[in-house]
Length: 313
Image (cartoon, rainbow, N blue to C red; front, side, top):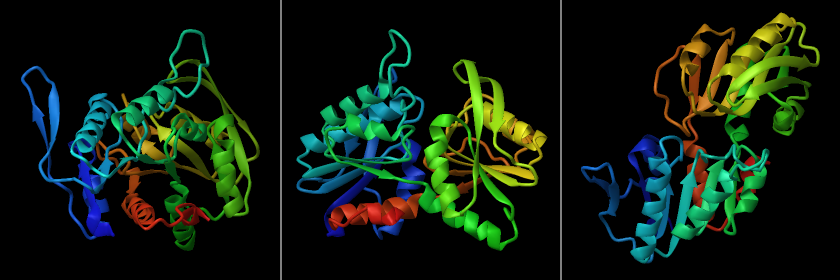
């Protein structure tokens, strides 16, 4: 059945898409972005997709061209008589606008969901949404993959090598506590919460640690590392409270502004991220784990009508 699928990607997610295709023992389809002098562009699928199941791999991180490119690729495939179109969005941008938390603001995550559906996608595959309820913004099937399938084996491997012997997990805020609780339950340990206070977006005013980290190796779990202010301030506070070491596992490395410099200068022993967003800079403290095998397996499950939830049991 895999012979009837086609996988395409725009340049920004091409490295990951190539690895996914390799895991599926195939190659990326030929797609060219034709650019105009004013900055506009037009995706051109250079091979037939008539009657095919088409997968587009594209994370929608900044700039917004990545989102627009995905929409136009989907539209092009539908107009070319593709049988079924799946948008693989490893990082779903605008997800932090998942509710109306103040007057006169948009719900950006819902708007993006509407745009993708209107463009013609039949199915969405993504990873670690900022809020799981975003799945409900779609009226088409959503496969929500979990980076824990990659992070949990990594932690176990590190323990075999002698790291994280006095393990405890930390949630960067109240909202992430359920995600972090799953890690704590798996390793039969406890968790603490870093209660952060913001006065403006992307700027943490203060952090208060709820729980005991004395003599512990702390791992902070989060879905996004953006400016790295929360991570670095939390690491400082955890060490001040008596932690032996502080590491972090974050799915999506947005890494905006001076994030790389903050990580390098921080008390963090290690920051582990995935390749849902390609790194712009190298850092000795940042380790990248690939999601290629997980997405490839999920694609096989979709094509063969097998359960995806079994991947996370």
